[in-house]
Length: 331
Ligand code: F6P
Image 1 (cartoon, rainbow, N blue to C red):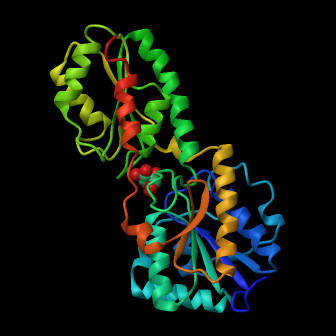
Image 2 (image 1 turned 90 degrees about the horizontal axis):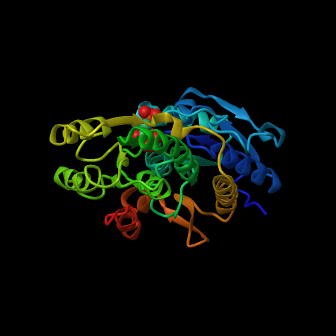
Image 3 (image 1 turned 90 degrees about the vertical axis):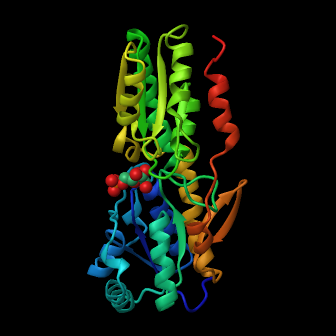
């Protein structure tokens, strides 16, 4: 049962939205009510905390949202919360609203905020990883990643049809400002020839070499996935550089953009969100704070915000290796 010090939990979503955030909100609300805790939502993440935008939530408030993309609590990236004055205003509101603990749902920036807030004001927090980027240490998968990859795949499959019909080379840009998780998984699932990601050095000469060997001599269509944060440039820039070297190729570029952030969450994301939302509530009840709930090797673990924020989760090298082998070098 609940420890006496936590009677009211506030949940909010912050940073880039991710499919499955609603399922996580639902789990936090229903989990809190199960343990006889009061629960409320904060609108627009830290922005709403500073502006005092709190709303009580009941079991019914979260009915019929598990399948919906976006977030019923809205999301924002808050500049004001970076300042001491902003956080002081947020604390006044949190105190006045009688909140004893918070469940932030988001990514790196969200947990950085929660960590500082705990250090300054002692508000316990257990975070839930919600970002399509999958770039959080302390969980194998983040909420929204699986859906984003499936959304990307849907488009990649369609682009492959037209690439094949017209014998073109397509550079497809997926999200991932600092990381290539979406790019690698969608490249494997979409049968792409290459994935260009920030974690590995992208060399123009290697792209040109491979396209020369295959596009000009054997395979008639190509799909190359580019993570938006690749150090060689975005898809448009890399495609322009390749076109300069190989003007005879018919090259097109598609940026999948924010389509990857929307849509109904997959089963994997709904289950992950439900597990981690409940784990956040149970963690708080057990006295945990300054940690993120995650699943590693199928087991629930809590990782300190410090580690989550500072440690880098590597992209699986074996998966990167596979892309080249399975793209059919010897065809
Ligand atoms: O962090 C998630 C993410 O979708 C990144 O992949 C992307 O770079 C960024 O958010 C885009 O953010 P915004 O929607 O604020 O432009």
